[in-house]
Length: 256
Image (cartoon, rainbow, N blue to C red; front, side, top):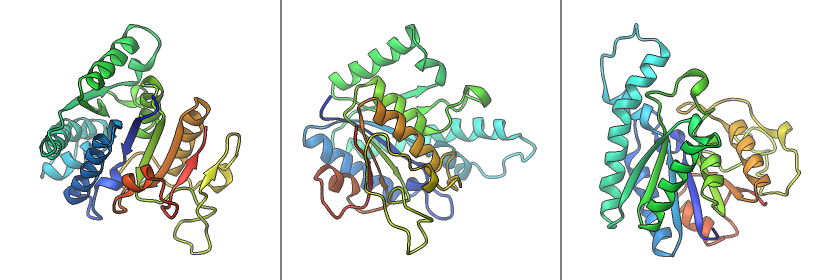
């Protein structure tokens, strides 16, 4: 759909340096999504941040819990807090939101895929904004998505979106380390372009992904005929500037 956009907000775009949820930034992104909706765009939001929410919410956790148990505990607690915050913020704009928790199995061909697709369709037809995240309480080890970059790409294809926007805390793909002033931002990536030699392999501090994950997702989604934008969610008005095609807005675009 021409005006259907999937917006993925990564953990690093939603957290402060101390790892706590940045509610001010979250509110600013909600304001921008509300602006998009008021200008006729259908938006599907894929949001990270549940585990970070839960980790900061619960103090004195049993440190004998293994990494899977901690992830289950923090995500169960944090997802409730995260969706509650989104509910309150979008309610100010009279926007109804619906939570969609999904797993990798739901994207295999068959009844589960069709049911999830039908759920997303009926939400959009009735003006409800889907907020999607992985169901981390039951998705563990091999059942997990690589990260929410992969999930957002699958959602974009499932819903036949025209554009996928991947927001993190980096402006896009650079020719070197983004912290190096000699590195240049790559703004356009035509189909068939190989940028693998430019991709940093380090993962983000707050999330499971990194630029390598975003690049892999962007290539797959680009091949499916969907435009992909990688941009910095911490920049003021980034979504509005991208939608309005402001020439000086830093980002990397994968054209289908």
